[in-house]
Length: 280
Ligand code: AHG
Ligand code: MN
Ligand code: MN
Image (cartoon, rainbow, N blue to C red; front, side, top):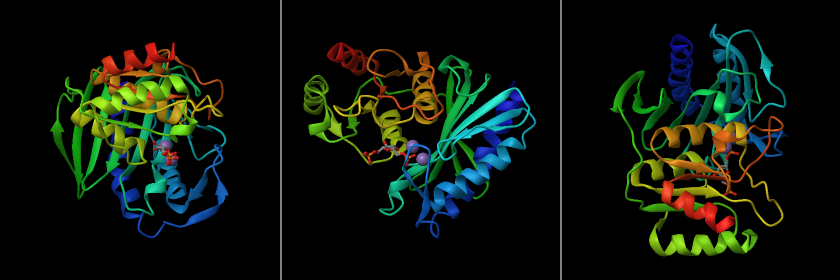
């Protein structure tokens, strides 16, 4: 198993700098939409094409699915990789953080969260970092000019929560969630940047909670369970945090279709417990 997961991580580590280098001249929208109905940037398509080709070249990888593709791309191998090739792509125009997210499953997709054997992300901030969770441990590297330098050998969510960020507009929130969010806003500092990876990395660094709740007219919320919920929950839970769809860990869920959406919360276990109590 390890050589397969290691090979997947090596592909992401090698491809992320190339995705980042390609952003500057791929800021335009294409004519196409992804299966979630989001308009596709040239950068989304570029990242997806690079990752699909290179990940399927790994012997152990038997299939590739992404937020940008209708269907799973089949090959043969025992690992199955789900990607959000560019999370936060609307931040490209405003030159803010974004990144590449991946989950490695040992079952065909869409799979239950319990089938995840590794997950992680590359984050395009002032520096490019790579965070990988596997075997119950989270490590972080700086990716710089082809080098991979270890930053954290055992990344853990800070015990003291400091920041929060919730997606959606306040009038779209349910009364129960709005009351919870008001309490959180009295205790923590607002950090919401429009890219889940950037916002969750703030939570992993400073402690706190991130979420994109179910909305009045969209109870399933915006974020995708397979491409965003599962991998980010795997990372945050391996770092000692918690995840929830409002009722249970995101890793207890199985998408009923490839692009299923879910309310998504990750971070401090106390705040996640409070959220579940508030929405009960
Ligand atoms: P993607 O660019 O992969 O579609 O993801 C964008 C997601 C997520 O990264 C972020 O938390 C959320 O959309 C932001 O949504 P709003 O623009 O509605 O705040
Ligand atoms: Mn995304
Ligand atoms: Mn995306």
